[in-house]
Image (tube, rainbow, N blue to C red; front, side, top):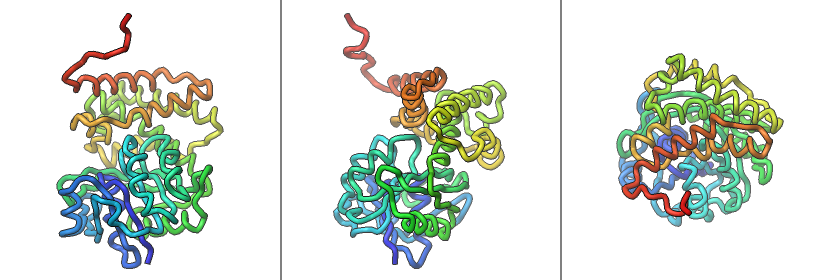
Amino acid sequence: MTRVCVVGCGAIGSLFAAHLGTLDDVEVWAYDVARPHVDAMNATGLRVTGASEVLGRVAARTDPSEIPPCDLGIVATKSEHTAAAIQACAGVFADAAVASVQNGLGNEEAIAPAVPRVLRGTTLVAGAVTAPGVVRFDATGGTWLGPFEPKPARADEVALLADLVTRGGLPASALPDARGAQWTKLLFNAGTNAVGAVTGLTIGQVGSLPAVRRLAGQVIDEGRRVAAALGIEVDADPEAMIDDAVERAYAHRASMLQDVQARRRTEVEMLNGGIAAAGRGAGVPTPLNDALVALVQGIERSWLTDDRIVGEGHA
């Protein structure tokens, strides 16, 4: 029996937890701070609707001290919560390999100080939590896992997690180097997430409206130039991924748009901001990604009741 703990059961974490929870040889635990969602998972299981219909067995807790030591971990929190969440779960992962399946850059670096071994991961599955204990599966897609180079998981651990996820119903691949897969998803997200958040458009609309689609492509091209300067070769065409998303998930609201509509802080700093930061380090300008970061941060600022910006631009 392999014990797996999912940290953060929003849409992505819930999809992984529920599908893994269908396997007889896996014991799935989950840590989340949303008490109604946790209570529902414990009472009736974690139900997936939409692209698949499954009911997974998940033991969920709001207190990680109640979770036993696990063999593998999957972190799916919002990036801003990564460090705090993984520190809280350090005892759960005292001798574990832990994967990030989060958006953007920098999450593995936040996980590494708290756990012995880390996997670099990326996933194309997407959805939304629609009620406590229920997650809608909007977009299917692959998951790619590999060792995080500064603190790598063993090859057998990478292979085991990929096998479990695949057998649970979410196709996953174990790779010796997952940086290309991570940057492929990053470029796709950079060209669709922030544009959708600023415009209010679904993924299908972003990909279908000519002027908006051109902008998304230009944002992706900036990211390609940064990846090339870093010696990273993307392993699929992000533009083709947009075409595929238009066909398979036209009405899906990307996670950043969901955040904006709920007035939650977005992950733009890890997505477009991550590309911009990497570009500065590599000497590659990224004006469009910089502009999208500024626009989304401006939207976030507009939610504040006190709009004074203390200490900025004052004599």
